[in-house]
Image 1: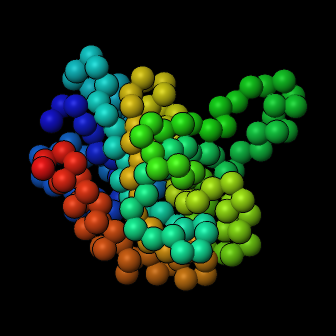
Image 2: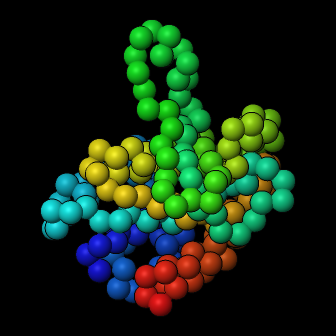
Image 3: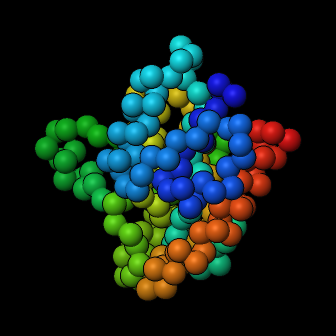
Length: 184
């Protein structure tokens, strides 16, 4: 399937990806994920870039969120855009993701596991991860379409460190969605 590339941060999150779908394990965080996807798209055998489908886990920033989410936008929650733009430098602070569900994903290199940070991020986003914004930036540079699919693994609070016990369920749900969407 040369028209799709599944991208996941970890092997644990990708454990349910069906055989036959091209898979890139990009690593955790913005720099490793951007580097891995850039190298892959630069070597992509087809002149037309693939549909990049980022699957993985996310923390819920608001009460009651669970299940699969398809963000419509992604932001870098660690960049002080206002201060930089006040210096006359223009930045891309948000990427729109086609065919999303209306939710916003906040990306940063911080593993969010405290309620104060979670509540601050919840003012502008629904979910938090560590790769989505970087992948959106690379896709924009290469002209590739991106779809982000996240499964809520935790509530981005002090209990978020139980992620290793939750990831298998997330991987199974993400794998089921991929199977239905691309192989069904």
